[in-house]
Image (tube, rainbow, N blue to C red; front, side, top):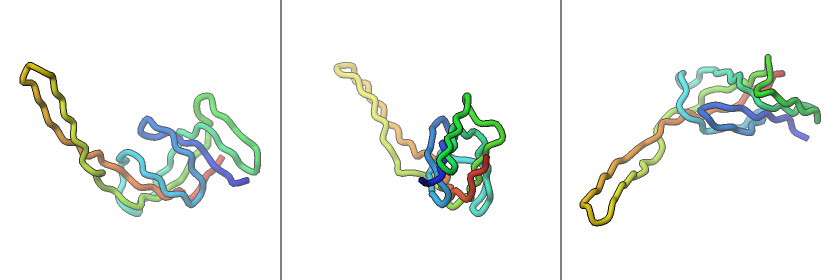
Length: 105
């Protein structure tokens, strides 16, 4: 069984293991920087599962910033029938790609 952890960042939870690359909402740091995610909700190491209430004290996931950028544009269109109301907006969400290097308990 592989070792993995469940981490929360940007209001979302991600299941990660060492060597994974995940795309999360924008975090501070430049390409090549090391980031520690300390909001770890669950860790499975050597078949033993540790569950946090809500997070595990002292546990952290170390990751390296691989890439930063903006996602594809989404179109937000609001429309109300029979009232000539139309609003069109676009939005590009910023993201950070992280490569998980280590999971420590």
